[in-house]
Length: 218
Length: 218
DNA sequence: CTTGAATTAAAACAACTGTTTAATACACTT
DNA sequence: AAGTGTATTAAACAGTTGTTTTAATTCAAG
Image 1: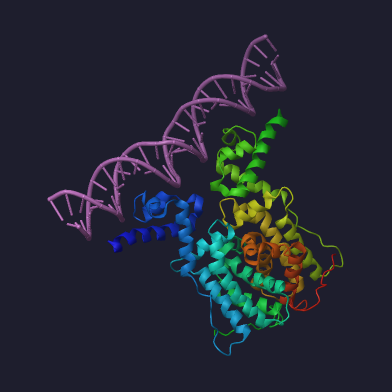
Image 2: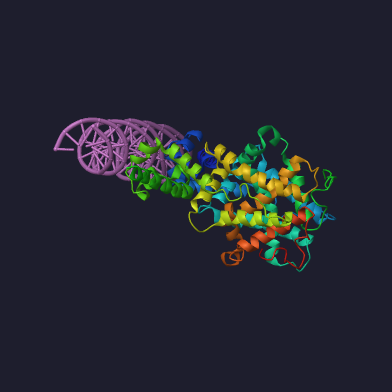
């Protein structure tokens, strides 16, 4: 009984995540969700109360399952440059993950661009820990007495570059052309962002330098 | 007759812009738009055919009225550093403009994060010209033989930092706290992005340097 | 004043929305 | 075997959606 009853609830949550991520809260309909979840229309209200509660549950599920860069313990002997490189690459991997279940990140990004009631929990459980991780790396890369506010801005500069390639990907693709954009793949983007940011912090050569073997596939 | 007939059509377009910018295409209702435009419900279909055509017209109107950084002619003797500084500042001013009519930029940003059929025109008429302007400045800031692809990535790095403070402003505010975020005002952001980017290109001191009088209120 | 087209208005349209109800099916205990 | 509480279903609910229809109104030209 428990196995079966939990099954439909879970199927519903999974279907809700996919559809909310694709269409957003308003445009998604509970009938679509129930159809994909192979459940009756009344199931949403039976298990979750109403549509909004289902949405919040889906967002929660998304940020609970994706805790990649939270509480990382860096291997000994790593330079802060290496740490930043891995941070950027891993962020991009999560973000651009074409594999399943892709809706987790998409739903979170939607919440980040167009926040609802669910975004407070998202910030506390997911974003703030990641921001702290990044803040630690930045602290290693800069002078000890760097102003806290400036440290935050540096973090924003790094993260914003990563977010761009997901949030504004359609526009970027339209701008440079579909074929050319295939060269804007994950390794290329990751290396550019890392080099750009390290150079900005005075911890690497200008991004315009000829050689580019900053991080030979650690 | 012409004056009056154009009046309601324009009122409708203005109201549509505001409401579409605030709620998005799906969540905005033609009844809300007509109420704000002081027109009958049938007016939308009478003047524009259907809701989607009204939306596209609103997006068009938005990107036609905002052509600030397109085809700029830089004053003689300006260094590329100064040009970049002005570019960033002006982008942020348009983007963060709290003054009227703020819906133009908000509607375009919505289209950039969540593109519909209207975004192709938007790219060609607004985004591509601005990208060309920025590309010119970057060309001045780097070696002549810089790879085109890398030039584009540098442009993305700069623009993404600007976009961040609009698109993800709610999250950023939630992260650093409302009071502290008041210090993330336009001049502070503009200076940080300019210094960060110039340093990345090897055209300025690291962003972590103590002094910050890069651009004393030109 | 009359004509006739353009504009506005009120009402109705069918389709869809989230949600609720009431009946049924099922597994379990007593 | 009857009873109990949970899970699922089909049907209906009331409200909103975009759109259409039909009629009233406006208003300049003849």
